[in-house]
Length: 451
Image (tube, rainbow, N blue to C red; front, top):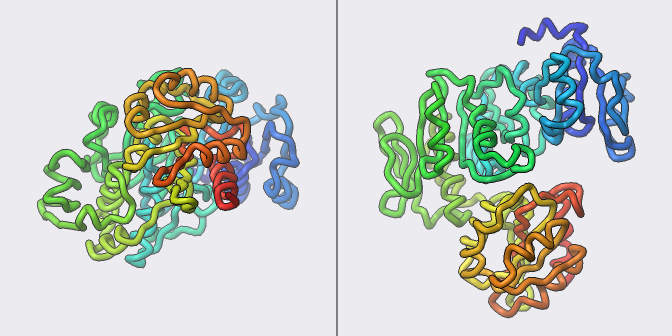
């Protein structure tokens, strides 16, 4: 996009929260005539509304009126589904629909590292940021991780590095977005409700991360993941693999219990696997991807090793909360799909009391049957999907229903015995009881701390 063409161009931004407000500001600064529309009531949209008022940007709340279509470009936030009526109508009227991610990329002069996948995005993105921190390389971490890309892009210079967590919803509406390095961690069932219960459609969305990459760009991918291997054949860029199960000609792998890397024919042993602070096979994959990104960005192995030894992970992802009565409580609220729960259960040897449920996204819980049978002593079914959870695991393990998180924590506390694990790993979205997964995790942690 020639950003000079934005001057006086009419743009509608759908969504007035974090990313929508950032996109509106970026477009306004660059001369566009911006109108913001959000179906939520104004009282739920502070401080964005205060900012829109201060900037004299016109907006509406509580609805999407006919005015939203009086534009040449529509920008949608990640929370707005592609099949939302307002989006479908815009497409019908030949209005160009872009994500906030695409808008930010129009103004970015810095090389972009884009991290996507069904699971591990936040951990990997954060870990790459920590590696760059340690090496004192100037960078910014943004995207789906919490800081809108559009809010930071004008502060960047060409020598900075942008590390973005990128969701499938953001990728659905890109046009020219082109990372220097893309990372595809895995493709497992998630958001099936948004993709017509089609893995092909979901995988195609993830593949958009490398759609615009050329021969001088790089795709880092998981060679152990079935769907990832299917779609990378489309990539036109250089492909570098990581694997926990086999040695790769170029990329990251495990050899003699060490994480090793081969790049440009040069082999480097980074760290003993046991020395990586975050545990579990899923975190080994995340670490491999981050190591490759760090090496390709010119970070020395010593800085990477030191970061891996100290990095404790991210909040709400297998986060240790406390021990009470020799029972350990873990917050894995960020586990919003079945695959995340599978990996979480694999991380423990102790018997587990599992808090499972929320707003279902088309989950197939049968994928968890065997691991639940082996590792879980009881399930506390929560949220809108409690009945579905109960039906899925009836006869496999004991189940108790809870109508609030207070009841759920109390039930788990009563079911757990000395030496057990209590794990919140819901496999579902949080919007039935909570604002987001962070809110769900915070409430869980407060209740556990008050036991």
